[in-house]
Image (cartoon, rainbow, N blue to C red; front, top):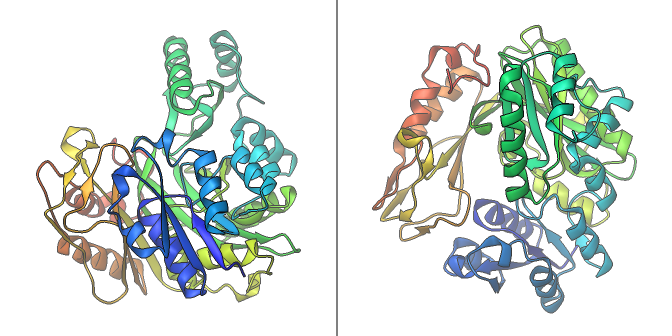
Length: 445
């Protein structure tokens, strides 16, 4: 096992990784921007290194600053968390070149799967079902129109380098395609530095189901079951649950088998997620593959008892997976709600400010992953996630009752600060969600 791990991230996920390291007896190094000088991450880590200004480009996205910090502090490995550099093959390659273990898949695999258009083709070769659409990046609006004509409307345009729900546009009729193509391409260029788009058929009334996989690179690849992530705003998840409700056993088994087959096809090492779109007919198609830890990994941990971050660390250190597929037993139901510093009444716009009050819920089978505290400044520079509230119960009805109780215990105050707590409670009370007949259109409906 490593003696020292640098955590190249911030917020709740950095806290999560530090805690897993501590339980393994591993020393941790945090990196922080000026804005995060007083963060929980800095307080928890054994050592902390200032790497730049609040703007992520000069700090959490600065490969030289992070690698230099690792070398200077004697870190043998870097855990990237999610977001920022977590799916950057160039970063993983630089780590490798400096003799630092990157806790994630190899640069080669990230390169293959990070290009979402190329990943579609690769997974189709492996026998996974993919949606009709372009076989690679679309060169022009005229080409997009021709592919959409063959595919049939509605279609969705996606940034090849996209993620986090950004860089997407649904087009329902031919007249809107050219404008959507140019707008989405400009957005992708500005946000990801890569303007390439691909196109695929958009499935109406769909559910978003994903499968957690882990491979150790030594012959063992397993899945930890599926999660339903259909409750989204602007293509970004805000409620996740495991297992997916109202999912026939045969479909569940087929989804999980497809994910493992895809992971094995590329020699996937570490934790990853295969995301699928599920039609009302129960036909499913691969959307994309995330080569990192997911925000919603706690719901899988809660129903399996598997510490996914611990497994990531052990695998990166050269150890085998601590369990095989037959060892994975799922019990009960877990639900996660993302409490964001956003104003739902203003189209979920960020609502930053200094927290004067921050009291999280507790009680049996309630887990809160957070980096916030009274006095913490919710700034404008980063993601608005304040806390992930996760509950477990023997069945879905009890889990939803427990989640409503937990959300009701949240106390968050501060000038200008608004949260999604009330919105989440109203969403979970909606008849479509309670009956598990909801789709990705729930919030827009």
